[in-house]
Length: 278
Length: 347
Image (cartoon, rainbow over the protein chains, first blue to last red):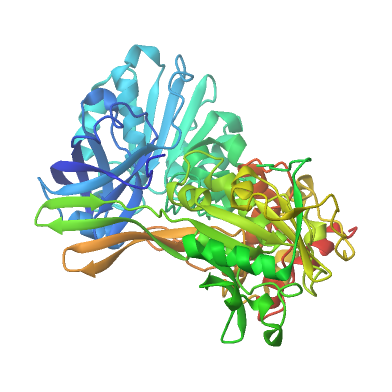
């Protein structure tokens, strides 16, 4: 008889540290039995993390499997499960169920310029894309990162910007909706920064993650003002999910399911159905 | 999962033989059958055949009345434990238990059996297999009972079913002048038939009385109506009470959460949920996609007649059994047949 796919594997927290206000990085080492499933996972995949007794919730995996036998999650404290996770520390046990979903077709992107657009905690599933490109730098063209948040204290992975910028042919552009007196970069919405930069669609794919409304306006601008083809605009969608296995019915994007047909889609597949996420 | 077998055997048995057979079944297995509970007809465990509604003339007959709830709950219960969680300090121990008892359900309406077949497409035939559903399904034998006539809210014949359709059961019974014509439809069904005791027959059952059919929009018709104002208008009376989903033989949305049993002990459970609920799509931080009632009601109809058939490769245009329960239960008069007929009307 089959296994119970709803049962998580156990993992130990190797490290818990602040990334931004109310956002923490959780680094997990899978314990015996669970390590095999997580030997390889791809940029863009997700997993459910359990705070036992409170429940589980899905999160984009925030690292590449190429950087060591650990799994990173960047988790904002927003609901009961994430609040319980924020109370845990090094050595505590969590459940991890996955890896689930599809991923960014990084092999298909070889030879192309890559434009990454991340908004707030939406940067979490984009970090493995950035890591992957940096680790296979000669396979790709120019890497341009547009990184945004509502406020400077909500920007994630700030301690890694140096590494990103030091890589060849790589640039990082920061913006916040509301700047403070110490802010030295752009201010305003990510679409304002995008309009200013006006990237060329030539041999370029875009990868966007953020709130649905940001995805809506960013992809609209890329297509209508900059001439990108829908199929070259990749996004990863967030949806409420309770199983991640295509059963619970909750995360549908029209006749597709974000958990098994996504979370990575190109905008040709998403089309007008994005409005059901707004 | 087509199990139709052209050369299945048939028997003709009396009421007394039927009762003796069911009594024998109830001795060895859990027997579930239509039973009156406070005046309401439900599929419930019975100790013997005398408790079954059809054998108690004073309380009405199951030949013309379908139970208030479908058999869905015996394969996909309203609440089900996925595993137990034991927490002692930093130690976590997870414990699994699976359902493992033999059940026979007697008196299953053809529409309800059809509903089980539609759920199979998701829980059994699409990977990963749902172990809880699969165990219950494997250990349960369905004995169908043809409806003599179609009920006031029924429309099974418009969505691929029929009051005497035997495709989705293991054994089919047709009442005929006080006796029963019995057909074994599957090997699992054949196993329950007493060898040699019953009189074989070559008779065929009398066709049940069919009601008129209406035309249901095919898959291709739905996308063009997605942005219609119709959904806002029809939903004005919807109360988002979710009764239609809970009573539906094929609605299968569920939520997963942890419940406290006692200090240090929890259960991860799943329970029925519905896309009609306002918080169904709510994501962390409070954002609520599909916040309009019209968007949610639209999703229910699209799921039933477009999304679910596409997602799970039904090969038909409908995940609806035509049982009509949602029409009867809706306190606001939302009628699924009215919606389907409206969509088929020319602009």
